[in-house]
Length: 216
Image (tube, rainbow, N blue to C red; front, side, top):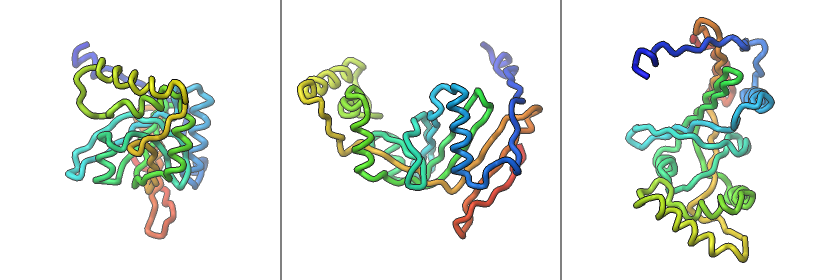
C-alpha cells in the first residue's frame, strides 16, 4: 500500500448521536452506560484501553492495557511496577486513557492522576488470575532487554516447575495495581461529515463536573 492508498482510507460514521439532553450528568455513570452497550454489541475486548504515560521530561509513551475495575473513584489496571509505564508513573503520576469501540463508533478519553491500588486488592486480583499468568508475572522482567525469546521461555519453565506441587503463587512485590482518578472525561460519538459529537466533563476547583460541547 502506498501513501496515496492510505490517504484515501475513510470511514463515514452515522450510527448514533450524542446530545447534551441525553448524556448522563455524571461521567462515571455515562461511562458505565457506554461500556455496557459496548459489551452487548460484542465489541472485542471492550475493556481494552490505551494508556499514555510520560517521563518527567515530558516524552510520552503509549500502550494497550486492560481495565480491571472501576473503584476507589477511578479506573484500575495491573502491571509490573518496574516496567516502563511503572517507571513513568513513579516519576510523573499523570496519565491518560483511551477507549475505542469501533462497532458503536465511539471513543472515551479520560485524564487524571494515577495512584497505587490498595495492596490487598492487588493480592485478590493476582489470586484470580490463571496460574500461567501468575507465573508469567514472576518470570518476565517486563520491558527489560533480554537475549532472545528462548531466554524468557526458560525463565518461565524454571518458575513453573516451582509451583507444580503447591499451585499457590504469591504476588511479587514488584507487580500490582494502579488506579487512575479522573479530572477529565471526553465522550466522542462519530457523526457524518466529520461533525462528530464531543462532550467534555472537567472537574472544577469545587470538585464539580462541568459539561461542555467541543467542536469536532
